[in-house]
Length: 258
Ligand SMILES: O=C(O)CCC(=O)C(=O)O
Ligand SMILES: [Fe+2]
Image 1 (cartoon, rainbow, N blue to C red):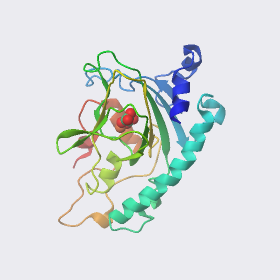
Image 2: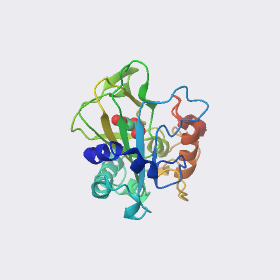
Image 3: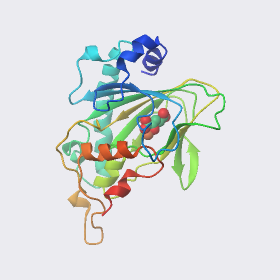
C-alpha cells in the first residue's frame, strides 16, 4: 500500500487532478490540508493526502484511483480483521466481554487516508502534520523508513520507531465512550530533508457520512464516583466539529466535556 500510495502521488498531475476536491463529503478525496481554510489553524502542513471511504458503503471500485485500487481493497479487508481483534483486546482491557466494542459497531466504519510528505529543504519551518489526536475509535498506521512521527508522552515528543511497525492509536471517540479509561494519543509528524515520506492511516470512523448511532459513555464503566464526562454524540457530528476546528493544537473533545 505504501508503494501504491507513491504510485498515486508520483503520477502526472492531469491524472491526479480528477480526484482533487475540497468537498469533504466525497468518498474519494485527493487534497492537501483538509483544514486549509480553518481560521484557527496558523499554517499549512507539508503534505498531500488521498482519503478513501472503504466500509460500510464504499464507492464503486472504479472510483478508486487505478494506481492503488487493488491494494487498497486488499488492505481494507486485512485492516478490518485486525481492527476487530484489536477491539476485542480493548474490550477485555476494560473488563468487558470481548465482543463489547464490536457490538457497539466501533469496527463498522473504515476510511483510509494515505499521505505523501515531500522532502523539505527547510524542515525546521513547516510541520508535516501538526499536533493532534485522531477523531475515530482507533487508527491503524503504516509508515515507511523515513521517520518523523512522534507521540507526546509525559510532555515530551518521542519518536515512533520505523519501519515495518504497525502503530495503533487510540482515538477521541474511544476516549469519549470509555470515559477517559483510554486516552487518545497526541501525535505529530516532522518534515524531513530526506523523502518523500509515505504513510497510510486507517481510521475506524468514516467521518463525514451520515450516521445514526449515538455514542455516549458505556454504562458498565460508570458509577457515582465516575460520572459521565462527555456529551453523547454521533460519529458524524463529532467528525464535523473536528474538521471545522482543524488541527489547531487543541482537542475537539473539550467541546464535548460536560
Ligand atoms: O503520517 C503519519 O505518520 C501520521 C498521520 C496522522 O497522524 C493522521 O493521518 O492522522
Ligand atoms: Fe493522526
